[in-house]
Image (cartoon, rainbow, N blue to C red; front, top):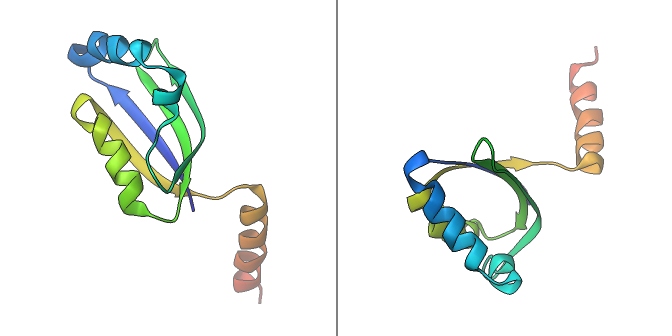
Amino acid sequence: MKFMVTWSINEDKWLTILEVFSSMTPEQRADVGDNVKMIGRWHDTVSKTGVAIMETTDLSALNRYLNRWNPFMEVDVVPVLDDEETAALSKNVLADHSG
């Protein structure tokens, strides 16, 4: 299952996060723990927010990774569907609503 993770960094934690993140190696930044795959991550440094798409069948593993960052920022997680999954679901929803 895929999850959209969004975050917002508090002003008082901003410089600390910049120091930590910029000092990490690419391998450390890519390490999201066992059973979790990072599909992509994007940062809006002006608004101190960002979004990542992650995939896992192990919600505990995802939560373990996210709790590494949770003391420094507000984190929200929601399940999401890709285009093909949404197209299939849409057909079912339309069938449910037809006559």
